[in-house]
Structure formats: structure tokens, C-alpha cells
Image (tube, rainbow, N blue to C red; front, top):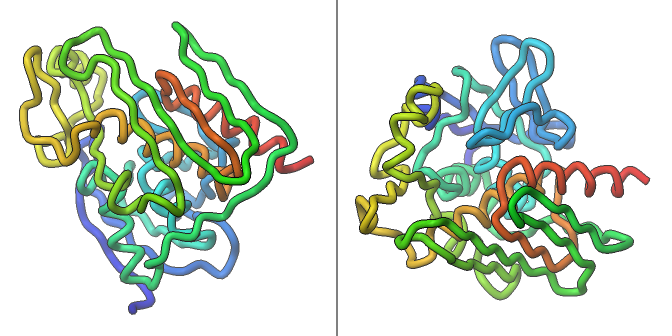
Amino acid sequence: MTTSITLDGVGIHTGASARVTLSVASTTGIHIHTESGSITLAPEHVTETTRCTVVSNGSVRVSTVEHLSAACVALGVTALDVNLSGPELPIGDGASLFWMNALADLGFVDENPTWYEIPHAIEVPGANGAFIGIYPAAEPTFTVLVQFPDTVVGTMAARWVPGATCFRDTVAPARTFGFRREVDALLAAGLGRGGTLENCIVVEETGYAGPLRMPEEPAMHKLLDVVGDLGLCGGLPLAQVVAVRPSHGLNVTAARTLSALMRK
């Protein structure tokens, strides 16, 4: 075990070089330190949700925090310093395994999420039938359903049952994905510039551009995003979580609702 670990990579959207040094923090929270200042991960600090989750505060702005957040919450990491050089956290493998392996070197090996009880069900509707329901339960489960108007991904489901299925093996390897037809528009919008066939699933008209890590990988990545965004609260709800056509915007709305309940 070491006291700190440094990782190099690129941002999935900016394509900019990124270096992070992770170390155990003396105060509770996932604290990201940049040349412009510091910010702690929290739903209230999210300012953008287009294709990723962005936190900002004054001159501090950090993109793509959801994969790190998912790894931290799955491992029960509640106090971490993240020293970042660059505008965006590195994408690594396009999922959370990159972060879980790094955190293992700091001694965080066992999956031990912080669970908090909620007093009542939460239902957050979104556009075009999207929906997140969070229902108090003694045994937590996370279920995600995605629906795309193509024949490759189409309708696909993924599920994680903490304690029964390992996050590291089941959820953490699932990479981000995008559709070939969207590539030009994404690049024009300044997004997706660090994407490769290793860190991103590219969906073609008739199939995938490369092999999947698991049959339901696109849906499982959406589940990873749900865990990461809800995990901005510092833990996960002891509940059955059902997400239909989730997005970062919908996830963060649910996280803010959860955060408000926790403060009561």
C-alpha cells in the first residue's frame, strides 16, 4: 500500500492531457484541487450535465467526475484528495475500473458503500418517458433500462445487486459509448476529442466498432453513471433504484433531491 498514486491520461471530451495524484484526505469528502482552486464533489456543485457531469465553483471547473465518484462510493471512500492538472479528469479505460485499481493501491480493496436510509420514495420524471424511482428497501438494488431508436443497442437492461454481485466485476468495467452518427456533431461541440476504441464503445449502424466487455455494456455504463451521480451525495440510498432512460441531468436532479432529504 502506498500513500499516494499518480495517474496520467487524457480527458474524454477535451482531449487534453490530464494528471491526477490521489491520496487519503484528512477531511470528509472527495476534494479536487486544481491550479484555480479546490472543489468538493456534491450534487449542489454540478453546473453542467451534457454528456458528462461537471462541477464548478467560481474559477474552478472540473469535467467528467462521475466515473471517479462511482468508484469511490462503491469502495466506501469518503475522504480523498485529488490533485488535478488539466481541465478534465482522465478517462482511463472509459469506465470506473481505472479508478478502482488506483484506489486499491491506496488500500481501498473491499466494496463497502456507505448506505443511508430515506424516509419515503422519490420519483423524478424526465423528458420523453425518462424516469428515476428510488424506493426504500432493506436490500438495495439498481436497475437501469435504456431505449434507443436503433437496432444495435435498442432496448437493453442492466442490474446491480450490492452484496450479491461484485461492482468491480459487474459494473466498473462498462465503458462509455456513443453513436457513429453523432461523432461529427460531438467534435464540433468540443466533445469526444479524447475518445478511442479502447475507452469508448462506438455504435455503428449494424453493430459495434469493437468487441464489448459484456453483452449489456451500454446499459451497464448507464447504471455506472447512475451510481456515480447519486454517489455525489457521499453515499447511496438504501433503496431499490429504478432508472428508465437515465441521463446525467436526471441523475443529478435525483441526487439533489436525496441530498436535501439527508440534510433534514
